[in-house]
Image 1 (tube, helix red, strand yellow):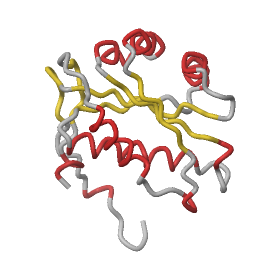
Image 2 (image 1 turned 60 degrees about the vertical axis):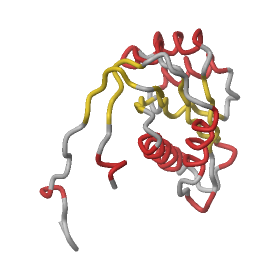
Image 3 (image 1 turned 135 degrees about the vertical axis):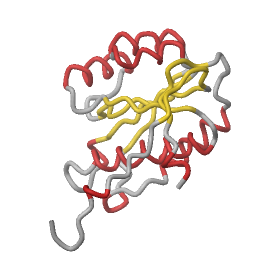
Length: 166
């Protein structure tokens, strides 16, 4: 539970790169996520090219930290792999969450930036990353080792819990 309760948002990264074995661990965690009927309708684009990271920061202004990040992973949904129409969205969200939890365990700071469902943003990412038409960029996870970050406080709220009925 510590990984889920100690989320940090990266503001600025060190120049240290994310080792290949750690990236592999993150991708294994993401691909281990639950998915509807085990359809696993995802693909992952690992980005380490600084010019691509800088272009992403121009597409998504709130993801300014990606311009100085050593790596990022784009989680994409593949509509041709879905057995149940529309469930790729939940499946990609679960994969993104698994990736974030593993990053925290590995002491890699990770920030989830949404791409889907903002159509203009999806189109810009698709063009930049040259994804096939049936592959939809879903989320951006910015990775690094933080110099500056914000720690989320306790988000538990018992007023949001209902038992048996509302």
